[in-house]
Image 1 (cartoon, rainbow, N blue to C red):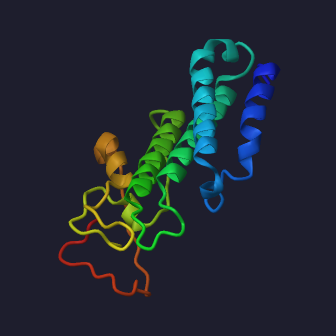
Image 2: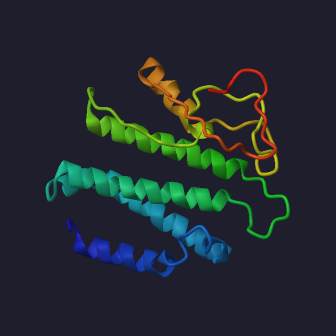
Length: 187
């Protein structure tokens, strides 16, 4: 809406990738296509940063903030896909992809909280592993995450929210086969 020529240029750079910018199809992109997509997204983020004042002269702060955030989310999604192991890997290590995911979730929540203002609140429902505030001593799924336990969204959030963050855990009757919690709960 604020620069139709720029919008058409960005659209023409990104359009060839949109149908493959998904979990199951990203791996079909060639290395050059991935690099082109990553560069196009980075350029779009840079345009929003450089042209903030000009864009705000033609739209609202809220519309600008939401559009800019969508470019940041696209950048996170690209990083997530780039760090996922190949789908045909026998013993995939998803550690880096999981780190990208949880740090991105935390950043998105922080953005939402910032938008709400000092008295704002956000309620998040997520798996216990994602919301826990402290590190784990043991990785819950060593088949996919064979290294040291990763930092969770909750740890990232707790690092800047401190006592303003409250985690409420829920339990269910069904247990995960083979998963045992030893000692204190990680929450």
